[in-house]
Every structure is written in C-alpha cells, then in structure tokens.
Amino acid sequence: MSITYSGFNYPNRIARIFLLAMEEIMGKNGLNAVLNMAKLSNLIDNYPPDNLEKQFDFAAFTALNAALEEMYGPRGGRGLSLRGGRASFARGLQGFGALAGVGDLAFKVLPLGAKLKMGLPAMAGIFTQVSDQISRVEEKDDHFDYYIDRCPCCWGRKSDKPVCHVAVGLLQEGLRWVSGGKEFRVDETACFAMGDKACVFAVYKEPVG
Image: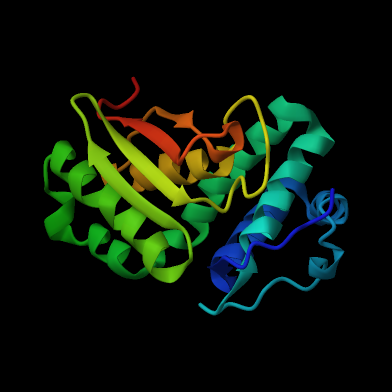
C-alpha cells in the first residue's frame, strides 16, 4: 500500500485527536503496527502538533483506516474505525468553534428535532471550515442526508461497499452529544470508493431504543 498524496488536508489537531483515540483503544504497540502497515512510521512517537494548521493529508488519513482493515479484517477494522471515530469526537472534536454553542443551556432545552436540525449542520460546518473536507446536510422525511463532497476517509480507495466507518462513528458520537445522550442509526448509503459522486450518510431522526 503506497500513499499518493491528495493535496487536501485535515488540521493537525483532528489527526492528533484521532491518533490519541486509537492509541487509547489499541494500545501504543497496536497503533504502531498499524502506522507501519499504513506506511506512516514517521508518525510513531511523533503525532501532529496540537494546532489548526492544515497539514495532515487526506490520503494519510485514508491509509490509516485502510491499514486497520488490512490488519484486522473488514469486520474488525470496521469496528475499530467506528470506535476511533466515536472516541475522537468524545476526546475533543466537540470543542471546535460553532459546536461550542451546542453545549449552551438554551440549546439543551430545545426539542430533539430542533437539536438535530441545528446540530448536524453545525458539525458539517466545522469540518468545512477548519479542513479541506466539504460537508453539507439535507433534510428528508424520516432522516437527514449528511454529504461529504470531498472525503478524507476513502481517498483513492476502491471498494464494493462503503468504507467510511470512522465518519459513521464521528456522526454517532456527535449526535449522542447533541441530543443529550441518545443513540441514532447512521448508515453510509453512498461512497466515493464505490464510484459514487459523494459519501452520503443517512442519519435517522428517531433515536434507537
């Protein structure tokens, strides 16, 4: 697996949060093995700095997640990516910009539907604002479609099924935070890796259970 860099970047802080989350889940040796497999051994004991400089290439982020699947199989890699996405949000992504307002008391007393209607676009806006990822949200009858029009999770990958599990995990944990602790079903329904024009995630309005 060799990396062809995309020229599109995440801020260092997002990559650092994800790597710290994965280290927490897998242990240092486990993560180092994945970094070696992903041809990212330069990151061993050398995580990106905690700043918003856009310097972590989408292709490197994709390589990291592809290496999880290669090492642990599709099912195991998917589970780790989901957990990594959730842990990343919990570790610090909720502290980004506009999302800070989602923690305000005025937001907390809103009905659930209003929280989702405001919270999801706020999440999309953060990624579009601080990184080269382009995100947007469209409301449908029973769900929202969360679009990633330039995706860091599957850059250059080819697959017969959706592979952006880390994005699903991020959305699930973001929704849990926005809603005050409820779980929501999130399905990736389209993926660049499958030849689609965008990565699309159906976020269902009714909480699970």
